[in-house]
Image (cartoon, rainbow, N blue to C red):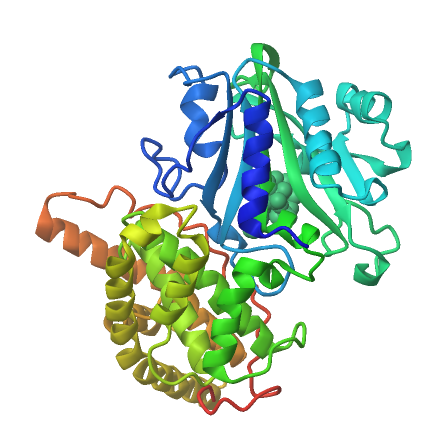
Length: 471
Ligand code: ATP
Ligand code: MG
Ligand code: MG
Ligand code: MG
């Protein structure tokens, strides 16, 4: 019998409790005192005060399973087997206590002795200059040298500006040749889905100063992060994180609702089904953590994810509201591990209902307007929609910029982003002057981390499925 995602989480945390780690529940997705971050995106992010020595941790060893959102991965969602905007990160941490050796040995013990992963499918990467880590893998753990890959700074060195930083070592699972890409040199670090990176061990042993000099930290730290969904994907022997027990249940809800068959790989309808499945997870967890839809900061991230999910529902020809039912599935799957979902159930349902209704009444209108704009552009022999019009769609019709870009891209058109930004700035200044107080918009200037949207390789659904919605 295969371990379910919820059981794997428990196995991990029990293992580290057995190694005298203090088990703490996930922090909120909303950073507490960290203005540099819009949403928590890793297990270590909420622990920064401990790593920086600003606060004393309850224990020098800790384990968490942290709710994470990475909007920067949004363009990957539905296209790779391993990315979601929402995921859970299993973590083990040492605040100046144990270091590399214990971290790697225990990690190996967990995956091979507790989870019984086949050793011959496991690979490790180390930072090119990190001979210590290489030596531990080769001589202490006994991993054959051919499966230890040295990688450069880009892949295996963790740092953000100045302060604590250091090399890392990542563990990969080889899913086999059938997943290989065309690249002859396909190995861990390759972007395809054959070698799945699932566990990152970060060794914060240096401090970087303003001039770029590195000095040794008196008390080096350990920060490891393992994607729970990826781990479940490996353990359950399925194709993608969307096929694991808990997520599959949500995906099945989308399939039921749309009546469209699922399982054709990269086909557009499959991608839409996965996007909806992922986004409803983010949406449900974000609302449970107190975020509500708005036009800036976290609220805008939420709105964008929700509306994007709603729109992909339209692309699949789903009639009427459907997101509440799906969020109920999220609550059913994760409510035990995250009681806040159960506690906020009614509120989550209410917010989604309101937002979906709001959007539903404007989406057809907005889509029609974009269609008209596109037609006009084509007549003029142009392919770029003016910033003014893009802004109007955003401001008057509540179309997130990225959604407009996505629809334009489907029609081989683009949006004038500079013009859009200029309009946005103008409106903000006007609003600010009128308001004269800043109230709660400390985040409004934030870069939302979203990809440009133009990267999205959507070329329209017309070729694969006639949805009757997008023209
Ligand atoms: P990738 O290279 O696959 O994008 P990463 O190197 O960005 O992953 P890390 O920052 O090292 O990821 O995060 C630690 C772990 O969290 C990863 O090894 C992976 O298991 C998991 N993880 C990272 N991003 C995602 C995501 N978008 N969805 C699901 N799991 C993720
Ligand atoms: Mg990544
Ligand atoms: Mg990586
Ligand atoms: Mg990584």
